[in-house]
Image (tube, rainbow, N blue to C red; front, side):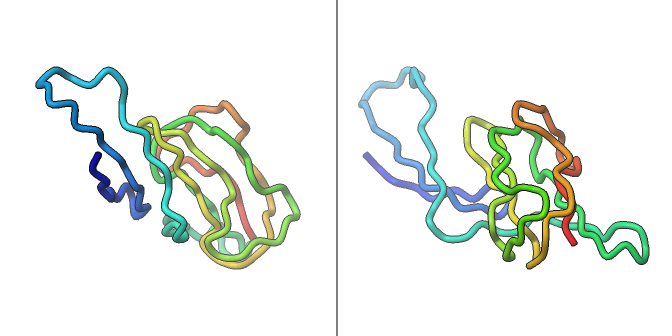
Length: 122
């Protein structure tokens, strides 16, 4: 088995590949697990002038696997807010800055596109 590190949208993943010696296609995709290091924050855009809110957006298309944070929760930059499933991997969507979760704008099982607003922070 060989281990590789791949980076998807700034998040590093460890992937282990087993060599079978055959040329045929694998029967199952390799399983990827996030590294212990904190994930890079997705791009966040400021909301309307004077609102002081930051939108937390999906960095990849996928399905909402888990909503980790709750409205009113205080989070630090890099804390997980939402976990997406994309390309058979779990992709954490993290707080871009310290603050309070003002709204969660999605739900578990929802399909999202790149750039969709998932949460708002103050």
